[in-house]
Image (cartoon, rainbow, N blue to C red; front, side, top):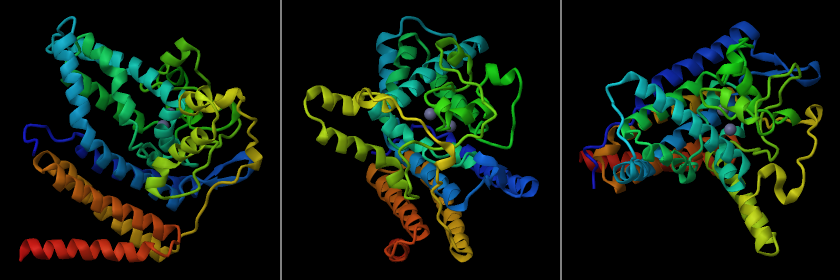
Length: 386
Ligand SMILES: [Zn+2]
Ligand SMILES: [Zn+2]
């Protein structure tokens, strides 16, 4: 059934801004710093790496397609809880009410984000945002396609407190968009701001795998929550190594979303006894089987790197631009399409992302898959026009 009354996804309007600012940051990184930044041991490393940034951008596209489907359900559940259990009604004409809704959202975001890091099955979803070994605006767009399974539950207290659905959706959008600019190495420390708000400095720490960076700085807009609940870490002079302790070592967008689930499945099968099996799913990733997370030696870390030829880079970039246009059409048309139409369109885009990633990784089946998906698209277009 087409959902004609469902509003257009507001992320649609942010997409051109995202693309432009990623391009501007990359340009600035080259122009001002020659794309190099000081790394551990006094060496330098790139700020942007083509395959990594492209993979993050592709994972971003995948996440928007995956998020479009359950959005009807999760918003529906919030509305239902609001209608049935709201203890009071909020005045939507009062600007203070909107501000309070944002504050409440940010508070529950802190706990959701903390759970995302401290419960294995939730980390399996959120790890996608963290498995890049670089830190730039493209990393911000590297969003998980599976965290929707648990995320919505954390905001139901807002429905019970009477926050109208429009306010909840607006607060969620502001919280998400705010965090975008904090993913950069080009903005240094900002003094008092770093201790009150989430900022590039304290969010760099959140994305690090150095010992002091693990499980801290969970805030969305306010870092005050971390200071209040004892999870705040200030950025230190030692260079941060970004990424996760279970490296992804792949540019495939689907594997970028699924690799930790595979690890949980392997651990679950190997675990003996019900306690161990439950731990495989729900224990903290860093305290799995009561083992303390080992010491991380930044000097020994090897970044995942694949070299892409100029011609392939140009082809992948051009195809990505086409994919972004297709994503915009998908998000714009989604409320008017049937579920089957949306799924077919979404599948075609996802196959394209997989093919391009396979070509970057030098897989033999990448180019044939790319040719096949365009042949299918041309055949469908021909049939529709004819
Ligand atoms: Zn996180
Ligand atoms: Zn982040």
